[in-house]
Image (cartoon, rainbow, N blue to C red; front, side, top):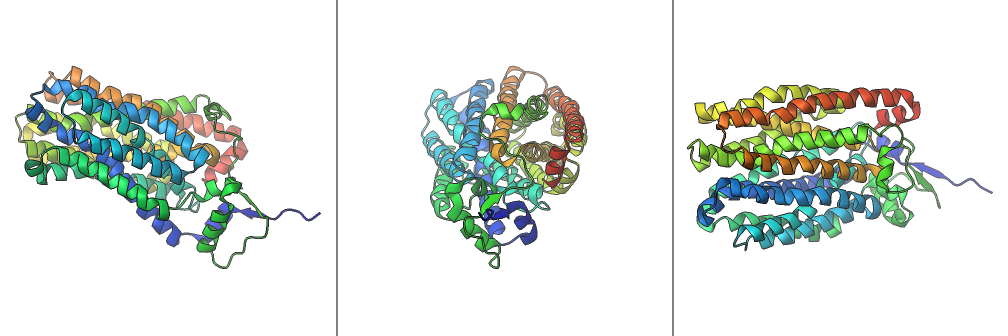
Amino acid sequence: MAEQPVVEVSRLLDQRGLCSFHYNLIFWSVLLSLIDGYDIAAIAFAAPHLIREWGLRPGGLGPVFSASLIGILFGSALFGWVGDRFGRKAALLVSNMWFGVFTLAAAWSTNLDQLFWLRLLAGLGIGGVIPNVVAINSESSSRRYRATLASIAVGFVPIGGALPGLVAGAWVPTHGWPILFTLGGVIPIILALIGLFTLPESIKFMALHESQRRKMERTIAALDPDFRVPPNAKFVIEDEQQFPGFNPVYLFRQGLWLITPLLWLLFALNLMGYFFLLSWTPTLMQVLKLPSSVGALAGSMIQVGGTVGSLLLARWFDKYRFFAIAVVFVVTVPIVASIGYAGLTSTAALALATFFAGFCVLGIQTGINVAGALVYPTSLRANGSGWELGVGRVGSIIGPLVGALFVGLPVEKLYMWSALPFAAGAVVCFAIWKLNEARLQARPELGAAQAAA
């Protein structure tokens, strides 16, 4: 009996490099990341207008700030599982359609209760984007570009978060705050409908599922027209050891029993600090008696700096992973602590401080999104990334709520206290680095696979 022919998928990707498939994938990843970032941040830029129009106390917005983050907590894990079970493409399309519908509905909110529930439901879909964008990019490119393409794709989330600031400055004065949610709802719905026909699927996901054979063969033909898939060939991912199912218990196997919960804690600490900055900075600038335009500028600079940091730090994080991320955590502490004092100094100083805060904080987030996902094999990647982001969202919920509790403190002291999660993050990240190095040395087969990744 003839031996079944085998197609080594990772080797094929390495030999082909980048082609039109990858450019199309990056194009779609950037679009999806931009609208994901936009919808996460929209409430922060609507907040000052809601305070005036609905006669609210600033602290009363804390639950609404956290509503979508509560949804993201569950949505990241849910759509991470959907991505591993039904495909990255299906998870991305359904999640965009879901949060588009509920974000659009938020434009007709008339009180905080309605806005809270609509933002919570939208958060379920928002949470599904990042785990699957990371997975689809890291699983569809060569070893040389695997982490870099995923970092670039996720790196556009912050610039998406800056776009509501531009909309708030240009259109909210004439169209009112609902325009922020109208745009944030219509665009992902349109993207989901178009993506049904043009968004590609993860190459390695297709390789693991026989039902995707025809798509896989067409994709290989597009990647390398000269390569012919032998009849009845078996597709294998030769540089990764797979798990037989999607049960989260596998996230604790093969020396990951301590690394996985520490990764969850790391995500929680960074997201706690980031969402405090994102949610409260525009409002706290008004507490300093600065114009609303200055608050919008400060919020936008966090996102712009985050995009620059995500892109510039990508290759360094790609090479040194958790060690490099720990170093940036340390640098972040004094920068974040200085924001309140910068706001008392000048608009230029504030813009500079918020830019570099975003540079570090969102650079870190992009780094741990990718480095954390690459700890796991293809069969668990979206699931592992989803749980990291999902459990980590506990921190993103706590950040705005703690801000609401302590909003009466002097602004400069409040920002000093907000730097503490990043100091703790440096310690946790260093511990993950040492534990993962020890794990890979103890298991040479895992070390070879992760070095390839």
